Structure formats: C-alpha cells, structure tokens
Amino acid sequence: MTITDLATTYCNRVGGSPGYLEQLTVLTKRLTWKAADLSPDLIDGYLTKALHSLSPSTVANHRRMLWTLLRFAASERLVDASIVRPPRRVKRPPPAPRAWSHAEIIHLLDACKRLPGGKKCKHAVLMRAWVLVAYSTGLRLCDLLAIRHDQLRGQRILVRQHKTGSPHVVYVDDNAMRAIKELPVRGPRIFGDLICRDKLLAQMRRLVKLAGLPGSTKFLRRSGATYCEIVGRDATGHLGHKTATMKQHYVDRLLLAEERGAGPSAPPLPLERVG
Image (spheres, helix red, strand yellow):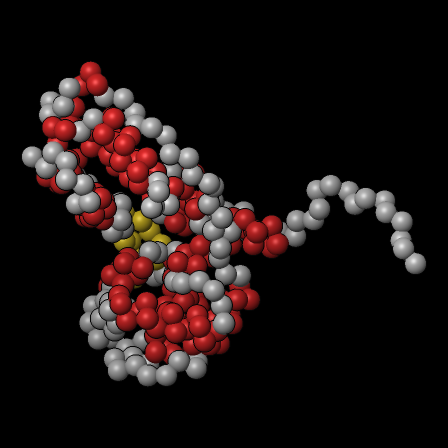
C-alpha cells in the first residue's frame, strides 16, 4: 500500500471532506513511500529537507498531515505502534496578514465601473457583486462560486464548506443583496454560472491592477474578519472556523490598530525643541 492509498483509506474511514482529501493527495504524491515504511525518523528527514525549498507554514501543514497518517497507520497495524512519536517541530513566524480598509474597498468598487467586456454578464457588474458578497460573507473562493440562488433564505445562506466539509451559515448584507439582484440568472449558481474560477481570478487581477492596490480576492475575506474584530465581534464565526486561534491568519493587526485609534503606549520623550 502506498502512502497515497493510506491517505485515501484514512479519509474514507473518518469521513474526511473532499478538500482535505485533495490536500493529502497533493502531499503524498510528492513522496514515494510505502505505508509500511512510515516512521518518525522518515518524516523528520522529509521535514528538514522540505524547509530548504518550502515556507515554514507549508512544512508545518505537511507535518500535521504526516503525523495524522502515521498514527492511522499504527492503528491499522501497518507500522509498529511502539516507534510512534510526534515528528520534529517546525518553527514558523507568526502570520502578518494584510487586508483592505473600507476606503480601499470603496476605491476598488469605483474601479469596477471601468472594467470592460463580459459575455454572460458585464464584468463591471459581476466584479462589483463579487467584491461586496466576498466581503460580506467571508466565504472562500470555491464556496463563493458554488452558492446558489435557491440557498438564499432572507439574507442568510447555509453552505457546506468545501475545505472542511462542515456546514456554515453566512449573512449577506444589504449592499451585497442589491448587487446579487443586478446579476443575470444563467443557472442555479449566483457566480459559478456566470464565470469560471480561472477567469474570475484573471478579472480580479485586472481589477486590483486598475485600482492600483496590492492583493487578491483573499484580501476581502481578511477584511471582513478584521472589521468583525474592529466592531467587537469574534471573527471565528464569520470565517467558519472551528478553532478560534485560526483567525490570526486573517485579521490585519495594523488595520485593527488604526481603526481602533490606538495611540502610543509609551509616553513621548521630553525632548527640547531645537530652534
């Protein structure tokens, strides 16, 4: 049994989501190991080597997945349970996410008006709706493309998150609702029947360049999470996370401090004025 077969068996056994199975498959296809060869020393060697070419965050995710597969292999008696121990630690710097402020998002919406083209829907109209719905709901790109008109119940949508497989209720604010109503209906999906993933990303790159801003569609998810924290709400629910610590990867601390009006924590030095 290859390690890829082991990953598939694990996901089938525990009912893992398609998104998680995809992550495991991408990782295990990089490796030529057999399931019976799994050991902490083998994983340690891979992690040490991977740190030379991959980011610490990516390697830390690989560590987590390989540790899960090692324990599963031990439970299935494919490896000796007596050798099982946690793999080596992978130190990674704390994230410093960047998000867009409200002023920057409004500037982005103004730039939408200058977007040319669009067969099924004018890009100016489509991308305005995308920006507003992505900010309001905090959904990931794949989940945004999958939402349907018939899922709207009032101003809420219940989605099955592709990455985690867990249900998640999102709120669509008034601005986003008005933008959705301006979109033509070409099928059951709000966005997915108007544009595919690759073309959406291409249009988002055009829009960001036109607006003269850094970033991508991920910034909208981060902005929604950051403004939740600004108004005193926990961003965990907005993001659809089960673990509260995950929001640190999305909340822009600098924007949070600016919007809350945080001043200097240390008193200024009593320097004498020159001249």
